[in-house]
Image 1 (tube, helix red, strand yellow):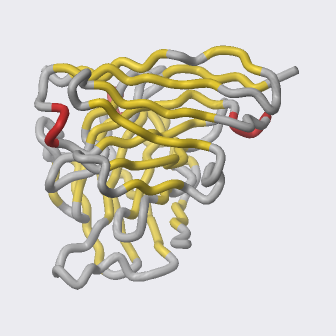
Image 2: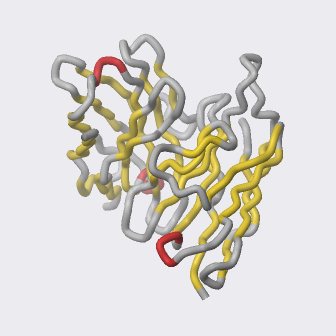
Length: 118
Length: 111
């Protein structure tokens, strides 16, 4: 069974940093592209970043480019999101989601809440 | 950037009745490989989103056949043939031809 478990969320001050993690199990992690998608309280979904299976291809939404860094450790079956220079508008539940060769975002974690507030 | 526009933003449906959601993209989602990268997701209350439809009309594993997707180019539709209570939630379309962009979401509730 595919499982994605996010962690690392919490309360951080504007301008601060946070590192999210996503622990994957139930599939060969190194074979799949992965993503971060976020959802601000009461709002819709916003794609944040994607990384290919071998980290060769990395993409970011304009809203986080230059501030967030996606990475992965295939030996540890883990996906990461380093978030720097955080702003109030980054407050959201952050989901880790897996792609497949044919479909995208077909498995999602339960999310971790990041709150940026002074 | 590709903008995805859904209508309506909310829908109240009697159980057993059909429902339809429209999604329009600002650019064609038809790729040179012949595939159209349009997806539909459902986020049930208190849950993570789940994939319903990929590449316009293909149902994901385990998705009931009362859900169907159609369309081409820039205009797409998700139809529920007979709405059930378990179908309540927010439906999102998403384009996957250039990065990823979601529509605003359509909230479906039961009358």
